[in-house]
Image (cartoon, rainbow, N blue to C red):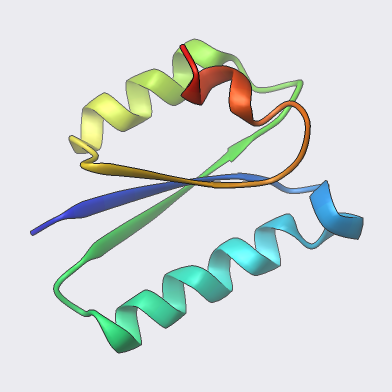
Length: 77
């Protein structure tokens, strides 16, 4: 099973980041149920190392990024 990890910034897009991430998770479950989607909140108060650990823990195959300015930090390291 392919595993997707969605990094989202809860406050991005007028506080719509989490809503969009959950919509994406539901959409994938409906359209491609063979995929596993896990969500991980990110942002200035979230330690980058924790995001890396989460990706490693679930053995993520793909990262999906939803958010603003700060969200790319962990995904680029």
